[in-house]
Image (tube, rainbow, N blue to C red; front, top):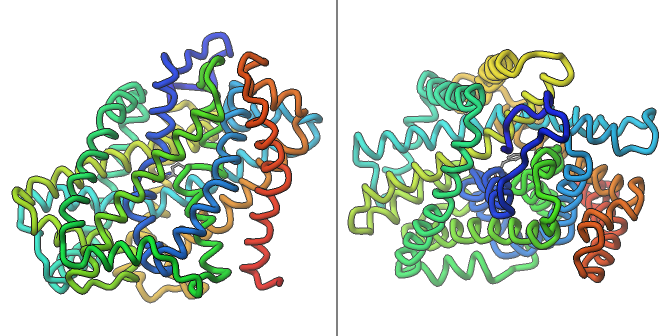
Length: 460
Ligand code: PHE
């Protein structure tokens, strides 16, 4: 099981996923979440549409995929939590590679601080769609519904706490098994529902314009900032750069084909994002929404497409419900990183580690929750705290983490070890794939991350 106590088990007792498909689906459960449905569309809208998508695809395949393969292979080679794995695999105990695990814990904490807030909005919309009519094609009306929620300091906090407690309960009851079973059923459902919404969106009058925005690149919109944001999004969406996938990899089966299964995860993750984008941008251009509306984009545009569907109020309920499950799957994997870390570093029991983490998240997270209301005026570095946590994790911590993971796998780990993992001890005949991987992870991925990071600092 993915999320069961990792630390008290000897390698022999680690159960792993029952099937290769189980490993694929659990990994997808971490990857698919608000990153796909909320973040991808709004960042694409803010950064110029198709040109951003091109940058994003480059980041995904030249950096995201190789780093994800690296994490999974490290996890399966180490068969332990992140810190122990990095200690075990580093050539000398004096080299501080385990810091990747510690930095990952910090990333997980800061991501949770704002992620729980957005998840709270999703939960609130699940309930709202039952108790009132939130459907409308009028941008003013849907905006008002959203603002009423986020500008109310009490409601923002309340929903965040609901989310935090739910995640805490899931983790303490060790019901990761249940999560895996639910995710298994719900990801296909989410997919189908997105397809249905897409059909409706594509028959709206503004569909052509929406698709052109999403798929016809205007390369004048490419900038250093857009490149950094695209890179950060790739890391965030794939749950990489912080060790979560090292933990997941530790449960992958020995005969599982790492490169091809990881590629399937990346492609499915991409498909869900594109489907979300196709649902949203036709609406934007049909009803006069602002593509660069930012974090609220999903919440203000979807009520408009559902308003144009038979049984729209049922569908919007289902949509937010499925999204809340996807978000929960991702949050469980994030808190798992923290609990594993506290359990390992501070020798706390899993239960204590979980509730201390949840308590601290409620404290720090509340500053993100209040950033549309009581703390709206508090903007260090020109950003609200919500935006700051988001920026620092996606655009600094995760890429730096990914950089070191790529360097470790490309340059520190013995190539034989990498090859053994990627070919399953020589039983797979995928030598071209392995060669390509080694080349990209050594030369391309680290260099790209470095260039983008330095470029955004204005070095060039
Ligand atoms: N990938 C998740 C999403 O898209 C978020 C996440 C990031 C989960 C990092 C785990 C680690 O929503």
